[in-house]
Length: 120
View 1 (cartoon, rainbow, N blue to C red):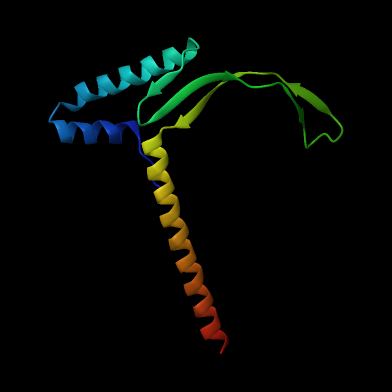
View 2 (tube, rainbow, N blue to C red):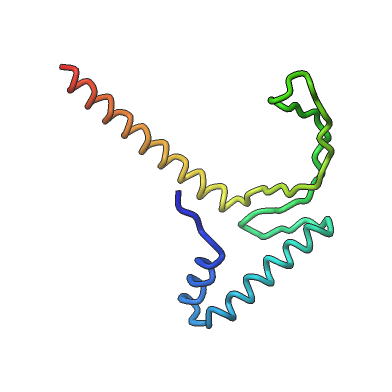
């Protein structure tokens, strides 16, 4: 599965704006640093039409070691980041979800037809 890296973002923005990649990298890095610092200070980050990052505390829970049956221990609570997608992002990903589902169904139907043809 392909992935988008920070480098890919920098190159794309540089190509679209004509800015030097080094300058674009600085802006992207400072943006990410500012988001990280805000979350570390327990401040939610809202990016309109993209989503909201919220720091939250997980509940402590009981963990078990599969290599030692019968033993259990408490996993302490810890701070994590919750992400809630914005409206536009959610709609675009849902559209992708439908497209992937349709493609998967077509592929399964083709495989069934091929298997049925081979069985005859």
